[in-house]
Image (cartoon, rainbow, N blue to C red; front, side, top):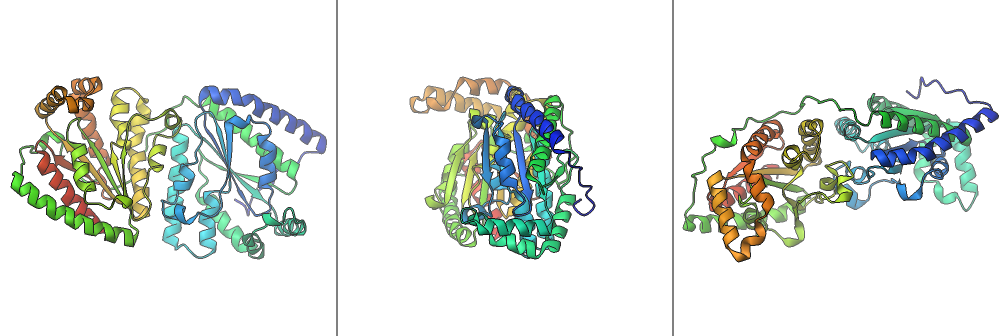
Length: 488
């Protein structure tokens, strides 16, 4: 792309001024439509050091209401960020619906710098490329406009600008050691950037190359690309996104009705096994922390199935400094205004820590599907998106353990009635629980489809037969121990 790029023809000063004025007016006017249509706009500004990204960005944001944009300078990841998945720090910064986010530097810079500094093997590079493509496509499919800009200047121009910045004590701080390294190894960098741009240039999320030799001309290119992209996105905002075929290996799993719910443990058996399992898990947790392995335990199941008690028996065995339980309720307004996985990316553990989710991202294909909280295209697309999310976690090195806590309809009724008739337990039962019970058959059908389409080889589902809570608790503990030991 860079090597055979046809540089756009720069207009004369008079035409440039007219077009820039027009583009500024259009961008200012588009803000109302963006807000009305709830269009989130993510602008990624990449390119050579000293190519003028910051100065152009400063001019663009003057045309936008400051309440509706944010700017983030993405330096190399911090030690804390390196203990999270590769895309974590970018996903958590995606904008709310109706707002802009401008990233000065991003995943191109991080991926290519790792290659240039020989930190990544070829397989690591390919994995990151696939992650980036999935990330960008998911944003696009979920209604985001992603505009990717690469600021191009020659080696001579870069060297001149670095010298000018270095001469002024007020701008000297803007020159990084890597900028000079980049200029010295310009051809090597050019080859790596060329490869990256070709690998991640997607029809729905293309790269735009900016001739950045002259600042005003660069500003016009960016402005016109931005306003035209916004116009197109606004026109296509109601169109459905394509449903992609699952690309990950799936594990066969029986339907819920095929599980034997008569499995039980005596009180004596339960106490003995509970003590042994918790002791073993306690020791394993120390090894996890030392080896910096993250663990994600996800619970779904019927209301009153015993998720809370099950979670309690696992966390009793853990060092409280090394785990967190996330009870997931309906999304808050600021969470609804973003990609539905955003709130889960924000809750991922650091390496060596454990995150337990009491209800999860699977709400998309259960509650949101059946209650009409999202469109049919959204929940149908979500199976593949969730598999992609969990693949990111697996590539990161996480242990992913997913439980469905299963009971029959009669057992649920008994537990609902007991909760309703026990004052200290009445807070556990709501009108919504009774309403959901009326849709048992619909939920069972949705759960069976979910299990079938998302039980992958790297994140399989485990069914906990929980008519006897004691049996389910011990089974869960044994699975957690086994899955962690396999990773260790």
